[in-house]
Image (cartoon, rainbow, N blue to C red; front, side, top):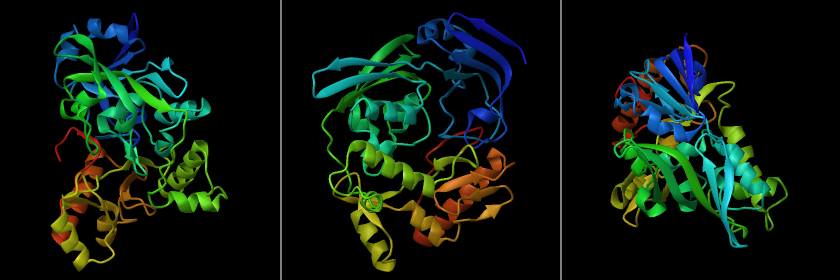
Length: 351
């Protein structure tokens, strides 16, 4: 394995990616470019090897399934600054580099008395990946608190700054997810408040706060602690069991279809959809009803604690995990007539 370095970056040939994806599946990249200064991007993208559409932008590897080796170069942003851009006493605009670990950023904000991200604690990955997937949990989506996104535009060969309204945030969706070969997120600006407005409507948070003895007027840090406790109970630690968190998105269906399904299956949970004419179904419930919770096919399996989580028990390949995911989706389609789709980006194969 050969390596070379330049001003703000390091290039490694024939690099292993096993430790750079939270599933822990074996994979390699012909070139791995580790970037420590985003100012190096114009130089780097002057090289044909990085201009190719096959270039993969890698964050924490927590929203990725490598079903094979990377077909081209892999670029990892490892910039990790956090700075305050504006502070009017009530609201603060924070700018965080793409390489900052997401959970570390949430704790940093809470530690400085800034609220809004507490429901998103302990989500794996980096700040740079957060707007791409529009990460969400416990009734909050990160897009609600994004002020702007800075990105390197590979078409314009320049850094651009997109206001939140231009990012086309949707349920686990964004402009950056729809155009993965164009934008490389380099930093994110967040609009956070010193006034805490709790979001406790999602099932489980209120109960957890009561168990903690903090149900009356909880602080933001206490809500974050409740979320952390719930997530640690329900979701396996990728450092112990390889996984990428929730593998499937909750499907959104027309209201009439949701009501017909709930009439047939009264225990089916329904949540607010993208508009008044739709409802979001619980993919975990659908998968559990098909008997996959705790299922294991060799080292590829489904968590016994949460039916949405695919796990690598040790030596599963990305293709084996993908095959299991396809069987799950086929079973849900056959029983309920509902299509479920993966959250992670799949490299080396198509869904």
